[in-house]
Image 1 (cartoon, rainbow, N blue to C red):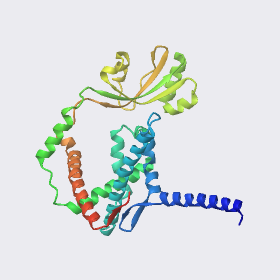
Image 2 (image 1 turned 60 degrees about the vertical axis):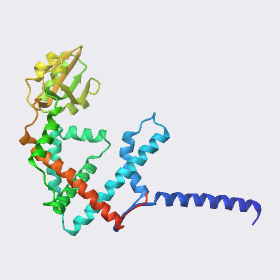
Image 3 (image 1 turned 90 degrees about the horizontal axis):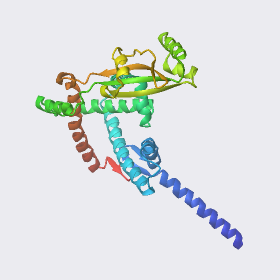
Image 4 (image 1 turned 135 degrees about the horizontal axis):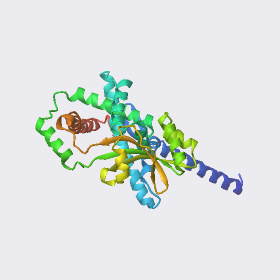
Length: 308
């Protein structure tokens, strides 16, 4: 082999070695739980939506790397916990049905004032709707498994519940809030009235936006306190029940049709109303300590191994 061929071969071998090294690094196992394992590549895919949602263009590479490492640790811990619980739950035939997931999801959607607002909030966080449903299933499985494991071991007293309630309502904002959806119309009174009539007949704001794309705009998820709303508009909004709309209101040459999604009266919920949620919250806090102790014991037995 001549000198030129030797150089070419050496460069190719070095390039190939780098590829193999990079592939090994990406496929590096970062954690093992029983017979399950997680690679660095899989972990990085899991943190991706959170990472994109946090970083900004003005961050330094060092700051971005710190955020990445923090997310890796947090998501890795969650994966270990979820995998451990899923593995152990199978031993006891503990499952979560689709109906249970849907019921839990529907309760969450109600608190956001509808599915549309709920999905919008998820998108802001970079979480697909179906992915969120999977998370709910894991969370419900965790709750069921913990209840199975610690039944009788965790006690929540009435005093603890009342103290938790006082913390919740201590800083409760008592000013009424309005959750609104606003259709803006840059046109004359006749156009605004025509659009209003279409909505009364069942057309959605979105359908109107498609039909009048050059003259309309939609403001979703508008949340305003009573003191923040123009008195003239407030007068009209106060007449509405949930999901009803105002007639076109003109302000500075722009017509607005406002839909009331939800109104919060500013009165804190009673102790009895909040009691089930407070109980669940306190139970989960205490149960989490149990889980952490349990995980530590399994780690010491080398059932859990972490290589990150």
